[in-house]
Image (cartoon, rainbow, N blue to C red; front, side, top):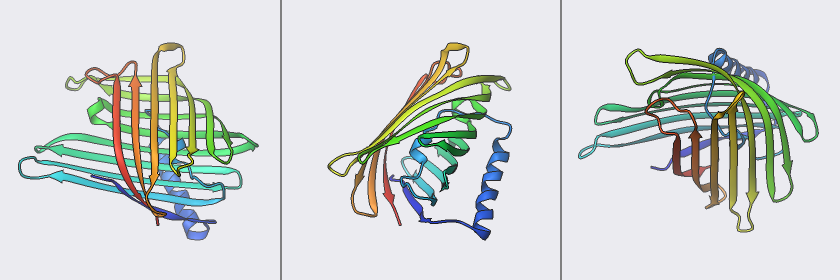
Length: 271
């Protein structure tokens, strides 16, 4: 079924109680990932579209299911908070998904990401980030990371683009499908990406983001993500988003496919 999302309106500034609330949320997220590492997540797609200072947020809830000939249920929760102020940017993401089929659990994923960036000169931003993730059905008991990098944004009247170069240190606990069998990995990966958002003459928006994360010291161990999306405006407040994600891991856990494809249609309502 379509996913509906509510967007918290943009405010010119947050102060007092609301500012403390935002700070508390960021601190809690940092605590959750202080000992952790992650898969590829398209951060460029989560940034605020505007140029001015302020704060935006998004809350998502999706529920679907079948009963009768089929017995299936799925629940998804998501939260995004983005703030830009005086050359700095802060981002908080959190997602959870759970599903059952015929009374048997077939999906259980959770994820949190926090990031902060500072513009050091026009066209150059320094960023630090941390992330934690769990996915029972990808043999991922835990993955966490901390890292930093440089981001080079570019734009004109019809497109926005950004180039990123950085690295992170990750901790991964993987299960190989056997009872009580786990293996831990600690390693460094490079983090390279290029993202573009182009507004077409027809009013459509084309989004493309490509990420490459090779293991430092072992080029045979790498991860690649390509996310392609087309946003179609229906009205000023309603839009349709068609997207395709391709994720490739050259060395996945046992029984997990190297390449994942995800396609979806999302109905967005802004107010």
